[in-house]
Amino acid sequence: MARPTGRNLRAELIQEATIAMQTEGTSFSFNQLAKRLGVRAPSLHHHFRRKDDLIAAAVTDYIAGFETTVATLSTGSAIERLNAYVTAFTAPARDGRFCLCGALTADWEDTAPPVRKRIAAFFDDQLVWVQATVERGQVDGELRSDLAARDFAHGFVAALEGALLLARVSPDVEVAAGPLTLVQMAAR
Amino acid sequence: MARPTGRNLRAELIQEATIAMQTEGTSFSFNQLAKRLGVRAPSLHHHFRRKDDLIAAAVTDYIAGFETTVATLSTGSAIERLNAYVTAFTAPARDGRFCLCGALTADWEDTAPPVRKRIAAFFDDQLVWVQATVERGQVDGELRSDLAARDFAHGFVAALEGALLLARVSPDVEVAAGPLTLVQMAAR
DNA sequence: GTCTATACCAGGATAGAC
DNA sequence: GTCTATCCTGGTATAGAC
Image (cartoon, rainbow over all chains, first blue to last red; front, side, top):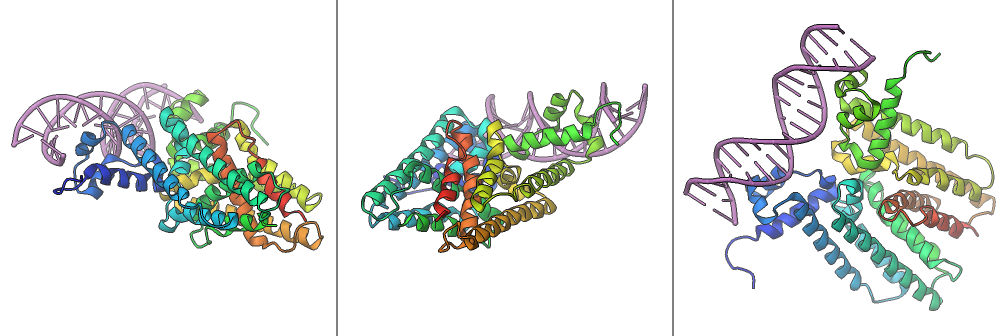
C-alpha cells in the first residue's frame, strides 16, 4: 500500500514534531523541523496547514501508539503487569524525553481544546487501567485489600509523570525506582 | 526599612513573573507583565536587564519561600509531617498553578545553567528531607521498616509533581489524594 | 524610574513559480 | 510537492528624552 518511491514526509514530520515536543514542548519551530528533515519550512505547510494541525496529529498518533503498547500488557500477575507498565511509561526518559501528553500540560492554555480533550481522555484511560489492574490484584489476593484502588492509581500515574520530570533534572537517577517502589508497597 | 512612598515594582515584578511561569512557563512576555502592573514594557528592563535575570530572581525567591515553609514542618509525627508536606507542596494547584521548579523543567534546554543548578539543588533538598523524615519514622516504629527510604522519597516527590501536573488536566480531582495514599501505605 | 521611539530578529503563514 | 520571496506579528532589548 505504501508508495514504493520517495519518502513519507508527512510521517517523518509527525515523528520529528513528537520528539521536539517531548523535549521542548510546543515552542519548536517549523524552521528547526525542516532543517532536520532536509527541506524548507514552507514545505511543511503543504502537509499540515497550521502548526496546530501538526500538533493534533502528533498527539493522536502518540496516544494510539501508547495504548497499543498497554494493550499488550494483559499477561502475567497484577504485579508483573504494573511493573511492565512502569517500563513502558518511563521509556521516553531513556532517550532524554518526556511523556508527550505530560509535556503539553506545560502549554495547557495555548493548547487547542480538541487536543486538550484527547490528552484528558488519555490520562483518564491510564487511571482506569491502573485501577482495574489493582482491583483484580486485590481480588486475587496478590495486592493489599486495604488500598483504595482509585487513589492508588492517581498516586501511581502521578509518580510516573513526576519520575519523567525528575529524570530531566537528574538524568543519573534511575527513573523507574520510585514508581517500582510503589508497586512493591502495594503488594501484601 | 521599606520606603514609605511608592510601590516596590521590583518585588511586584518578581511576583507576577512567578505566577506567569507557574501557568505558562518561560513563554511569558514583558508586555504581558507590564500590562498587569500598569506600566510599559521597557520599564521592566530597568529592574532586570535581561529576561534571564528576572527568571533567576524569581526562582531564587520561590525556592527560599518554599524551603522556609518546609522548615516549619518539624513538629508532630513523621506521618503528620509528611501529610503537612503534601498540603504545602500541592498548594499552588489550588490557584491553578504549578510548582515553579517543576514548570521550568519543560523549558529545560533554554534554562540558564545557574538556574538549572538551583532547581536541581531544590529537588535534591526535597529528596533529602523526605528520606530523613521517613527514616526517622522507621526508627520510631511509625513507618514500615521494609521500605527503602530513598526510593520511597523518589516516588513520593515524583507523585507530588505529577499530581500538580494531573491537576491541570483534571481540576476536579482532589490533587492531594494520590500522594496522601502513599503516606498511608508507608504506615505500618 | 518611567516614558516614547526604534532597532532587530524569529516565527507562522501565504502567494505563486517550477 | 517543494521551492523562493514576502508579509505580518510579536518578542527582546537599547537609546535617549523627561
